[in-house]
Image (cartoon, rainbow, N blue to C red):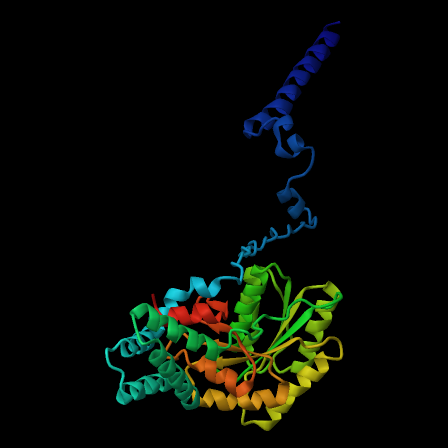
Length: 385
């Protein structure tokens, strides 16, 4: 009996000591209870555990960079063409004021002898009117003054205005032929030598037509000058017009052909074709201009060939005009830089040389400084109030 009691006591003591040894070592190391281990909290092994176990790590792709939004180009609404020259009258008057004042002062003298009339003729010649025209205007004025007798400032101004308007040609058709029968677009070809403002004129002309409610495509057929197509695209984007262009050095006739084709396909109202600035003395370049016109006319008739002339070039401009007229049958003239050192009489001289009207004039560098030419408004601006 005593033997059994001793054995039982030893068993109890052993159980107590074993239980203490099982519990104390785990808590003694300061470890957290199993339920609080990170792996068990998240329901799986940590990234460090996976790396230690040789598990492959998944590389995260860098965040996609969103490119900044392209700046939106605000479409401008140009003013209509009608009345532009009247609105620009003050600018024209400033550049031509000396001419008008000199003539009016001479004609208002109490005595108009031969010397006075010779001075009047010289003034007209210096205004780029041309010697023959200046002589005719002087003779007509002299006859009217002798018949009327009296010469008040108002009468003198009216006489001079009538003579100048008559020489400019009030009855000439100065409208741009932009309305065509059927559904094909009107085709306007713009030609000229380097430095006359030809590409800028194409851009401004596009603005004039958009202001008049037309839809426009511009063909950048000046492929010899890298900046020409970019310049045109800038002008066109402002007013919502389309541009057809190709790489630098491409065949200009091909660009013109594609522009007209796109104009037909999209049913726009007008296609403007900008050509490379050509020296009128280069036969090969002038022949190429004729080629562009022939290629375009395989699809649609060219309704206008507008020759851009720098109004400050005088007689040299006349020589250019004659050569271009022989190659492409010019239908109208655009006189640029008329607000500079140019004299108003150049309008008459150009028309007499070419037999075609001045249809547009450039009176500055602003986007809306290209205006349809109106003889009476032009003469009023020259003579002043």
